[in-house]
Length: 106
Image (cartoon, rainbow, N blue to C red; front, top):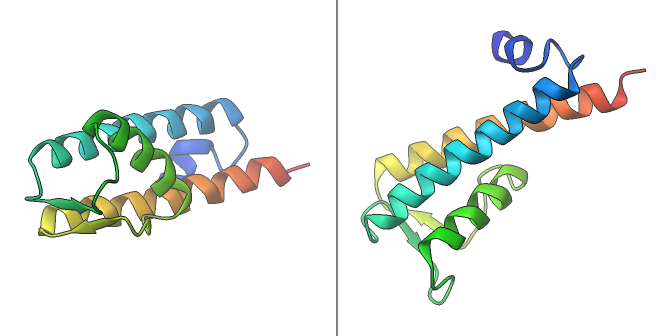
């Protein structure tokens, strides 16, 4: 409840929600870029997924936000990769839940 209240005041501030969404996308983009830049030490991508780690990181940050961290072309091979994907899934639940709250509020 505290994260929900801090990020959106229980769904009453669309501006705060969009800023939280933007911050989450930037943070997870950076995390994916760092983890993918280390080779297949933390995260393993399916063959021929992307030729560029930058575009792969942008794609994963966007898709995993709405797939709740369950995009199947990405396999964690280290506990740090598992932690990032789990945090991304939890963040997605909060962001989507609060978004639905302010969109359905009268």
